Amino acid sequence: MSGHSKWSTIKHKKAVLDAKRGKIFTKLIKEITVSVREKGSDAESNPRLRLAIQNAKGANMPKDTIERAIKKGSGEGGADYIEVTYEGYASHGVAVFVECTTDNINRTVSNIRSVFAKSGGSLGTNGSLEYIFDRKGVFVVPLPEDPDEDDLILDLIDGGAEEVEIEEAMIHMTCEMEDFGNMQKKLEDMNLEPQSAELQRIPNTYANLGDGAFGQAMKLIETLEDDDDVQKVYHNIEATDEQLANLINQT
Figure 1 (cartoon, rainbow, N blue to C red):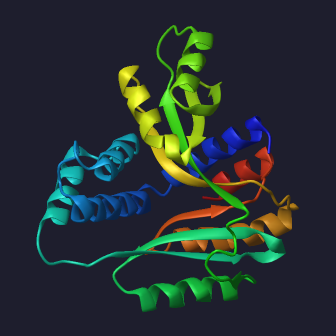
Figure 2 (figure 1 turned 60 degrees about the horizontal axis):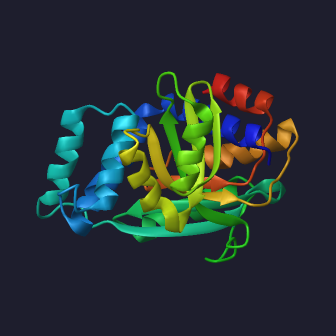
């Protein structure tokens, strides 16, 4: 997959997610809550919470909403969430990896299995897609004013970035999962605040689909994304700019 196609996918995907901001806030609040319950409400000593807050700010979540989510995670009682993953195939051989956070695993697996079955896909066993997806750190950072782009890219590579591209006043970069913390520290040292920073599952092999097949596969993926228990959905479709633009127009 070319760099242009990769970053275009990220850009268009963000536009689709922006159109579903209510759902995105729900998932971010759940991530903040789980992060607090896992390692406490101090963002300085809880890297996962710090990252969750950073991504919530990047999505323009109001400060008081973030604070309420932290308080909810700090309180006793409430939902006891667990994290589970599911792997399967959409129609036309599209690989789909689903990350969930749920308080009822029976409900979640039933819903996920139903979505795959109704959309012409099939749910597989855990580990069946390990060879298709690599875990990478993905950062999107606003470009500072009047930068020396060559020096900037060299500094980022020095911090652990393995791929850097600047497009429309945004820096897009990836790093190895093991370098994620180092990359965060490097950005702090450079006074650069990411719009988003997260570990993603990046495909190393791709499915190219015609428009009809693309629409069918995306219906499964979008149904999964709309499920309240689903946090993230990854797939290996290499969509054209036209397919992505049509997807946004339909949202």
